[in-house]
Image 1: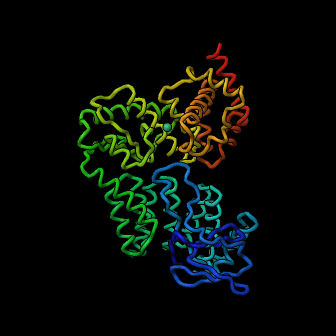
Image 2 (image 1 turned 90 degrees about the vertical axis):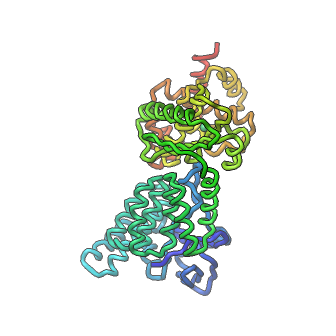
Length: 467
Ligand SMILES: [Zn+2]
């Protein structure tokens, strides 16, 4: 099996089983679809192709939240020939995985040839790809692991397993598979590409940079170049930074910040960590990176809008210019941003914005009192946003709309906690982690749909705060 990473201006062949093959160029000739890849020209029977998208390559399926988990990096692609295309369309067709077909291949593999084992591996891999494209990470992992049992030395399967773990922010597991892939193919550019991602996620910038440089030396790649530039920007800025570590955090700060402040911040973070850990009944497996910036450096590095107080893009970035001690405000901001890290890791970046911001505000101690009357009025005037519209990024909202978005997010979370308990939030987050849509998760846990939840929240606000 050969590998090829996608290029920015590539075409995409969409198969009837839903799989997308990203290629350099593609042409239809009679009953065949011929396409160019880094590995040369390949072809597929036209009968298994649904359609072709021109110039649509290199799309990242989903980037629910920023951070290492959503670097613009596409999965390693297993090139197909006609034989393997037949296996794939046997394993996945009519919008579903054909388990009967797959177990038939497994039967043949157990009794037979090396080729039969490769076919069984390929079928499980096809099932995993299908599940990944439908957001079912758990099943994708199970199928990809099974695929590997039939072809334990296959670099592409090892890479795909690493990729799945990277998408779940499970960097150490990813590195285990990448080490194995590197033993099979020491000159494999994709191994270095994914290893860079793993180290970046673990806040090991130096190793990330060197892996990505190695990847580029082995093969030009637009995604790697962009990732490397981002890592080097971070690295340059942080070069003169001092580093502190505590049990759950690595903290970096510039020479301008006070070492005493850095120590206080770490202490506060550890206290917040324990509090959030018990509220959410969850402990993030990876150390959390925190960076203290002076204001100018903050804007330069993050390219965040001016109004952003702090930021969590996988690492917690906090502007501390002029501060010499931990103020109550700063402590509150730290707890808010830390909550985002917890929710991001717990749900594998699947939580919608209103849940992220609602829970983060709740944890920092915000309550709806001051805004309650305005929210009730907003709702009665039929101007309240729908929760479904608050799932995606708020970055484009006006300041006014953003104020209401934050307030409604808090009010809904506050209602859920006060009318039940934090356990309801935990259960919603668990369902999001398992791949449920948010309205579905809410319905399963609270037995109400989005409109009913809003109505109950308004009732709660009226009863609790408005006379
Ligand atoms: Zn926030």
